[in-house]
Length: 68
Image 1: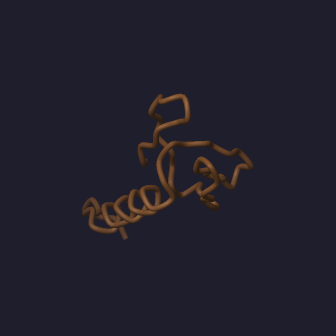
Image 2: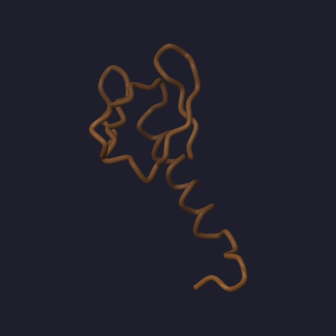
């Protein structure tokens, strides 16, 4: 999960696997593949970096023994 700050200042966690697109208007709009949209204060570049860090963390994690 990545942490983002909603437009009202509250933080929330978003599953980056559900992100379909991120658009930079006056605020940043995250569109999810569920059809939901989230307006956040984080910039387009900040969201991009958070998703990259999330994927690197997932790819570098060790799988439990016996997993394929």
